[in-house]
Length: 239
Image (cartoon, rainbow, N blue to C red; front, side, top):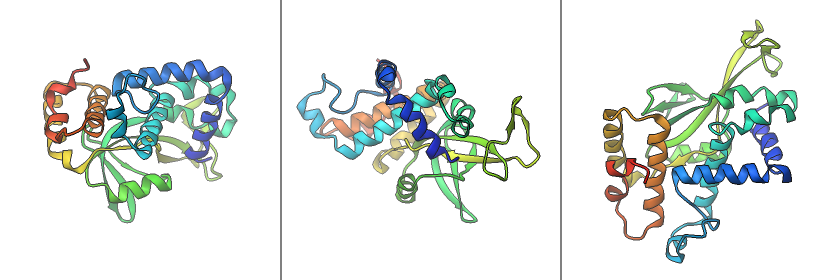
């Protein structure tokens, strides 16, 4: 089973009435860390909402679901309600790698280079929308990758004892989650300076990338704000 299919299966569980309170709490947590977005933010002024388009809100919503399934452990918590094939992706989602990436093509393969963490990932699975966005991206983007071991038959290659024990035909599959957030090209210089300061302060990955999402939100939603003002080291602190 592809990650896309497993992802949809998990969202199916999230869409059940009994999951509504948990989903609302996860969204509040995500917005507290990365900023409020969309019509659901009752405190937003009409001026602020006017600067936000539907495509941007949809991208933020996808980023929220990436956060919910991985960092907030929703995939792990509902694993027992999933079919075995979908459940095979749960360990990878629970330990997904978040990074600030640039994309390269190496021998026809998409490779994501993490500017913050330093790791490179050769991607096997990616949805069409993400591929199209990456092909035209000119600045770093916030995204997550997950992996699982598969056998030649396409099923999970982990034995019943868990991921430490693999079948002999096992090979890794790396997938990009659909909730990438693309920072604007005009903000790249200021963004890279923020990364330098964050690294000097030894800040954690999630703290830094959440702060960059708040900066992207400010640039997008506040009128007449320049990139150098939105993306600045002082904004690394969550107020």
